[in-house]
Length: 211
Image (cartoon, rainbow, N blue to C red; front, side, top):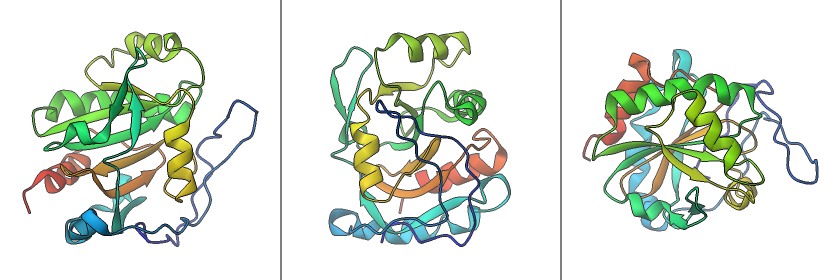
């Protein structure tokens, strides 16, 4: 299991609306998923992030066996296919969000601030929008709040979301993953966080630090 089941009772942060109107909310446990393989060696790095699961980051769940995100298929705003493997050599904070998700909207300025403070060749904040439909609404929202420095990617058919959901890695929005330079998911956090806080910056530095 890549993410250790939490004993914390997560509040329902946001309802995930899909095209058919089906909803999902956060629950108290993570599902089981098989992992290992090329990301097995990242387990020690993930374990080193456990001390950062305090305060505003108390919901952070370091992975017992990091999942391999390198082959996850995402899309650019113009519809072009992208993969997490394209960020090889760079640590990524992958945030899954939607315009209708109130907590997502609240934390977006913090993600923008983090990118402005720390974004460079070894680190990027990737905002993965899961709005079903065309690209105009998320583009307009990001522009309106000035979140123009984020790596803007999309999941308009929720394929990436559903793939991660089927593996027990995500059940609601927002969900954020700390992904290392090899595409291995070191930790996840369900719900919003102040990602530009000193605690979050310390977490990012620890994740970027060479093994």
